[in-house]
Length: 174
Picture (cartoon, rainbow, N blue to C red):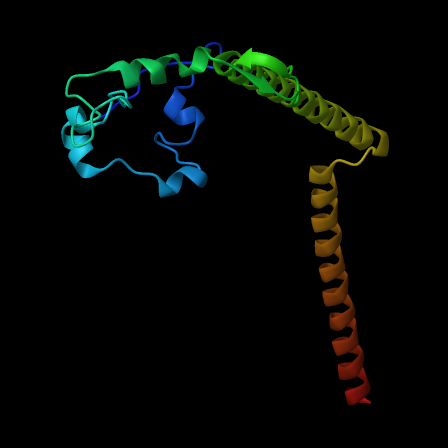
């Protein structure tokens, strides 16, 4: 089974998780998969560097050549020209540095957003508590009073009904 044990500092997220190809997949990554033969034997993965000077009819790739893999591993250190995005600076910068600046900026903004959300929730709770205290309304007390009034109303209705029945009986006797 293939596993990614890398972690990006300071987030602790692996590269496969960062790009959505780990446990939780992003929608863009859903179309990607590893061929079954490469999954079973990673030695089938082409890691050689193409030899453009090879004679016609001969192979331009040689078995055991890992120069392509080395170039791929070093690709993150190659400088490229990027435009500024978010908090990441632009200009000539390595791909790894640009990705780490962008991830750091996203993490910082997420942390600030979470802190603001918690502060806003605290303010909301305090405002609600002050409003209830100002209104002087206790819902539990109001429910008890409402139940008491309802029972008193029912008792009064029964008393009126009894008086009405007695009146009808008296009128019937005369």
